[in-house]
Length: 169
Image (cartoon, rainbow, N blue to C red; front, side, top):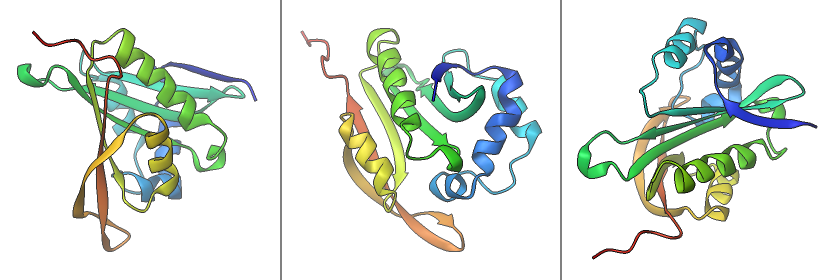
């Protein structure tokens, strides 16, 4: 498998829509079933100036997506939230790990981000393992965080601080 990571383009909207329409992705994210092409076209066309949307391309197909969204409040300019998904057919093949590695390089070396934050369903053990492997820690649990398939599910708040934070005066 040849894998490339690049910034998303508006022309990726349909491929990204298909990722977020995958049953396991719907269950593992805050997306709702049956995402529209227009929703993803708009999201990719109307990005905040500092947001980074990456895609993983394998065998000439977009198979993974990651969004990195810096905070916009001045006192939180050092932080960004992160969300990602890999198409069900490509899960477990290193796509998520590659996307996350590229996002961490951006955050640490180019975007001056000290803190990366995410929320993951508490029963999503593969994702939690991936995040822990990359320096994220669980900071707390949100009880009954989101409705998923008719049941309120818990989620973990996770964060990672830059491994070489700047020294304070």
